[in-house]
Image (cartoon, rainbow, N blue to C red; front, side, top):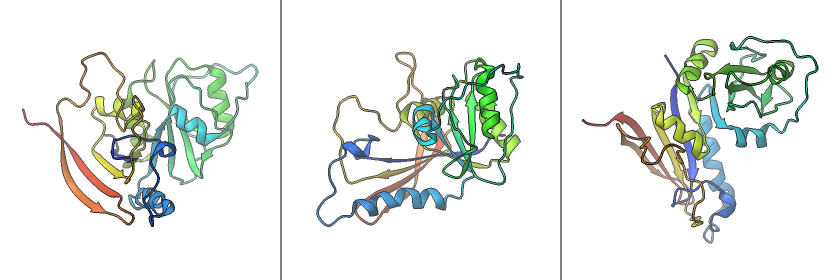
Length: 238
């Protein structure tokens, strides 16, 4: 068994992810009100934790590398740090490049999803930080196995997948997304080639959403003109 996974994202009307490039809010609309919707809905889900990719997690963790001298040889098996009942801050980090420096990110317990080829020194660093880690196969791309471990070891029943687009694409490819929660801001980006909600990196012609269909379950206009959509992911007919 794995957790129920909700891809919870905020976007411009053209599906882009970087608010710094969005057009300004219309006269009389508060940017702060628009920003607040995302975190409010995030909290209301009552999930056991959230998942992001390496780049975003590095920006949030703000730790620095601390080489561990003479690191012992460690087994490539899951390690549970000092959770203490907190929600999970899960970073997909196959190569072991995120440095936490502590056992939490924003108060939520730090968990790294790694590839088995990471160095013993990095594992020792995570242990010293009090962080937890699980493995997703040799290359760190066996996401189904990693999600099963999060359920079995941490009791995670519901997790929020909060991108970038590359991580969201990988989860879609593995059929790990059960629901999309999308907040569409009344703004446009318009920059060609910029990352969108799902930005799958795979072989040319590959279709990560093949065999899956979306069913609209909720549509709501929020204060300031933001639109909240929820879609259930179903196996496509045929």
